[in-house]
Image (cartoon, rainbow, N blue to C red; front, side):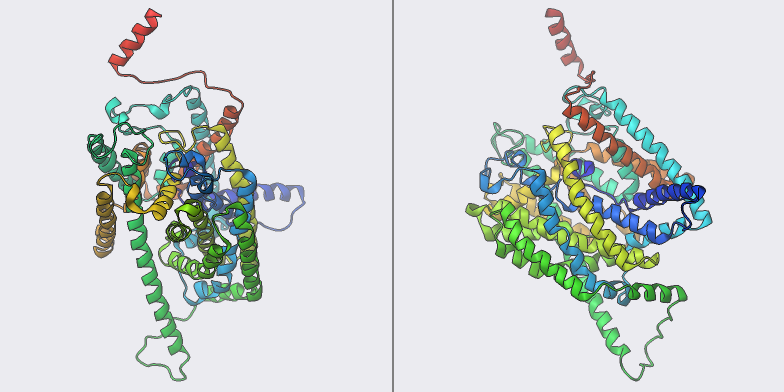
Length: 627
């Protein structure tokens, strides 16, 4: 949730969940064995089920839209612009309706992909890289040598968890005011600080930088330099010419509009390119599979075709177990229809502009899109849930219209669509993990359902703590700016009122960056893997356009630490890097809870550490002496 509300970059935490699941339950079962209360060993299936449940629960923090479409409905985000601030287009967060909404829309994606699991895993043998990597990790834990390594990894995670938590606690003492503390340390000087170039000592972002590939971190830095180092200072000089100089800093009709809409253009360009690429690969791969299946049923073998390799004993055993524990088709179809009917009835009660027939149309096309996302994720490890959500924003928002709450309808439709396609790809990843760890598919499905139900309760409550503890949540320049909430609402406004709301020359910039995003992706795919690593990722470049550069510098520090570590000892860095990163992320994230409780209790930090230039400091000293 903290990552969701700061940058929106959320790395995969499957490894952390698998590692901690192994450690805690292994410790518990050893204790029970000593007491004589437990005779059964801790198995790979149990480890897989725990990991699936935890990831499904935490995944709701993303698909639930607390940092994007759901918070984008609030008056905090809406009031940053003068348009669409009426009651029809605004809905403020409340735990009751958020929990109810998530329970209605979060489970249907699970039922949409269950009938297709055999096709995905057995027939097409899709790789699902994240699911496969998690399975190999869990399998390695349950060997004597792997258990020893896992024990060391958990110790490493615990050390850096403690360090990160205590570092967050230490920093809190110096934050008694705006722009106070280590998070406002002018690392490269005050002028660079004013352009958001500084290291803010965030253990979370350093950890994220260690998990994310190097190209993502470099892409964020390139986007930071291009936007905050070059573009925004130049466009800022046009105040009074291209836009009114008297506009508030948060107005989308001023400089803020360029920041938001140019980043949207890059995100849409990247999303469109990857959508077309994954969809085309899906269609080509499907057609090839169908042709192969047709040839397989011919009574006479084609002598010109190479003989397909015989499945190994392990593959035969996995397939037998995967097909033995069936989830009935009638159960999946019945569950989908039942939940769809409930959603058609209940969701319009939460969002009156989202009419029942809009939801009906979404649920008619959703299984196809869920299949495409799950299949594409199996090929590329890339979930396009946000892209499908954007598609719903524009189509449903334009259909509803400006006078009928089109902005709120588009954002709510985005939530319905994102939950379907996101949970479908997540469950497919988990089915692949279960297939490789010999876990029962039925247990995987039940674990996903339980984890999703936990997430529907836990995530709104955690978000509510942030919402009540930090009054400036969602405001630009605050500790938790929730950048994607503004981006998603701006998309909804764009879909309803078109390009008329953009400031001067913003549309031309949007066109340029939209096509540049497509071109960069096309070049990356055409030059091969060797040279593709030298081209930035447009989606990663777009994120600092709106937020700032500070987190990109933190992530590059994390990337540099991992890079040097890999040069010194590659095997150790690969084994313990994820544990160090997970400890940094989790410790800093957990500190957010006690800091929120302190804020709710009106307990303020005792010290404000702030940095001033010498001239300002002299004026402050003179003022204090005079008083």
